[in-house]
Amino acid sequence: MELTEAGLGEIDALANFRLPYTSAEFDLLLAGVHPQTGKHSYVAIEMKGWLAARPEHASGAVVKGLEGLRHTIHPVIQLDKMITYFRERAVASDQPISGLVWLPQARDADVCSLHEFESAEGTRVFTPESRAEMADFVRTRLAPDPSRRAVETLSSSPVREPHPLLVAAANEFKGYDEYVFLGNQELARSAVLEAAESGVNETLIVSGRPATGKSAIAISLLAELARRGYSVTHATGSRPATSTWRKVVGTENPGTKVRGLFTYFNNYSGAEPRGLDVLICDEAHRVRDTSATRYTRRDQRTGVPQVVELIQAAKVSVFFLDPEQALRPGEIGTEELIASAAVDNGRTVRRITLDEQFGADGSSEYLAWTRLLLDEQRHPLPIWTGDREFTVEIADTPQEMEARIRQQDLDGTSRIVAGLCWPWSEAKPGENLPLDIQIGDWARPWSVKGDRGVNGAPSSSHWASDPAGIGQIGSVYNVQGFEFDWTGVILGPDLVWRTDRWVAQRTENLDFGLNRLDDHAFDKHIRRTYRVLLSRSRKGTIVYSTDPETRHMLHKLVRSKAH
Image 1 (cartoon, one colour):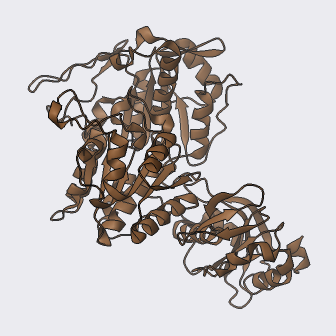
Image 2: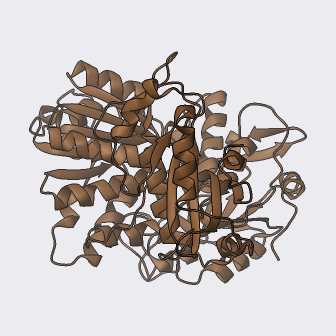
Image 3: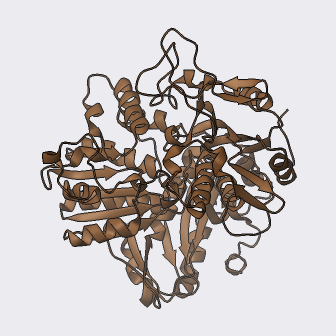
């Protein structure tokens, strides 16, 4: 109606226009020609049903609402970032894109402070009281395009694919600006930079499901803070993750000290209080009760909880986590645990939830499908309806699955993973890798245990990043934090479909660390395990189940099969 009243009723308007390689959408994208140049021109519109809002932080956080207050990203920053992303990914630079934020339920007096933010893209905020100004804003940038070629350009423009995480991370340390973060991803990044600059005692907790960009934001922050001269380190509780970051980033940046930026959670026992400006804790759901192990001498056991050690080690501590990925018994990292420890240690706490799928991390539709597929609540099985940027197939044999994965493995970025339903033997130098995983006449080895490769096969720590890893099978313990272009997932006999429900069979599982779990906790753990294994793909997943009834069920959900 607003377009018609502005005399722009013939403008092409595309609703819920999705940006490539992300779940982010323009609420409305207007396409036409520029009234002066005659070139294709676009106006992106972000619509918010807010009644009131005001900025709170220089980072771009906004407090919105009159009934209940909630922090979110400034809508102008949100739209500017989306425009930048869109321009870089899908539209030639000589085609102008403008942005406006439309607040149809707000009064100027209740959102006036939003206008104070200066937009790099010229994006503006409008309410019903400024409807005439909004019409002028659009008219100076857009006119109808009778040929509709502006719309056709959107569907025919080549799209630049994002770099994989490890490649992008190495480039970040070379000074390249690899990432354009969207929504609360950018809010989280800006909030950490703001906290580092202020130097106050603050803990930031950034939570998000798989593929919401947690590791990408963490690595981008590490590179940026190091460039700005802050004392900063990155920590995880995962040997494969930290070892791979050191190898990939260090190898791509020889002669630098970037390898020393990557540490482990248990490196901060006895650390100097506030000795660092910023400590970035990735995969923080893997935080443990204590940094002490059975090998720690009695006189070195401090009794300080690991989360407290991490908080005290820096002026600003940042925790990235997904509670649904806490897998090993003893992994206790939750938002509540971290927030409580931070408050007890005199820290201001800021929480941010990531809700946008990251551009390099696969399909939001697929991830939503896997969550429903393995959900603990009983509900109708989800049908896979497809995604133009992602492929799901069900294989009838492990040979079929492996053939498809090897067909797609053009540059060593595809892998096969499985549940821990087979023994994991030690590989010995000079001998063939033990073929522990046997399914009929198909047999393959697990990834090599330990930190040393054997006979050309990479160690377990480097299996995910070394192209030679395609020949071995990975488990949940060396895939967390990594992504692959294509993933073959073997559902073992520890999780099968029976009539109308999933059944976890603990006698079929050989992860002996789970022996202490009761049946309910075991069931929850196995579902989480396969949810993690299924969430590693950027482009496609081939699923094979060792159980015929489970395969039959999966074929009914996914109407195509590997061939």
